[in-house]
Length: 256
Image (tube, rainbow, N blue to C red; front, side, top):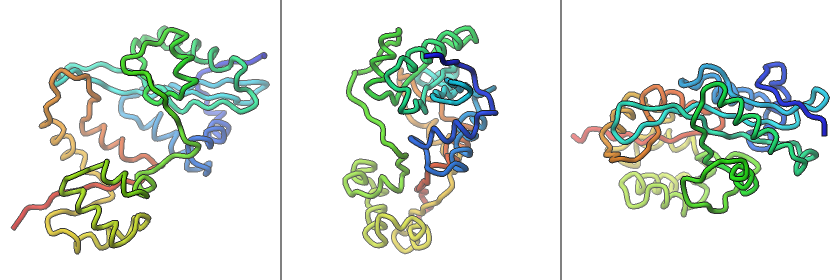
């Protein structure tokens, strides 16, 4: 099969966002916003790392690598790494060697650009096997992973009581959220914010994050010698602008 692999070119934005409907959103404009947010607004990136497979000028596969920053425990020193994601291959070109060629091209190209660390936290079974076959190393237990055909926002995740309990089990926030859901229903996202003051006197919920306070809170957590994602103020400002998701933020108020 005669295909060409190139770095990101804005000429193909519409085709990229159309192909990504499989894992992003069915709305092309929303996908464009997500593309901008993840690969351009990211505070750690200098330029987008997106790779395209073209056949006769048509995008048949996409794979993105987005920038992240990491640190070891409480150390102030950190390092940059790229996380892979958003891989989609047009159904007509799957199982024809496209992924292997694309993955090898990306690894070699990024190495030449000076990147030394690549992570993949969301690989499906096929991607996982292919990555290991071309030299990736597992740093955790290998297990079966899956990806859904459409993104699940936090509101959709709240559609089952079991997920609520798992999310914040046995905490004041859990009890607060459960009372909200019992009163207004799992899908009444906007009602939660309108009436939450009637549920608990010392907790409020917001749609927007408080990046500075979140960074301070993270700074108080004991990290030991773990390798952790750097979660500073600029990270939180960016992270919770994801146009594919809605968020609920719990904020404690001062007791009188």
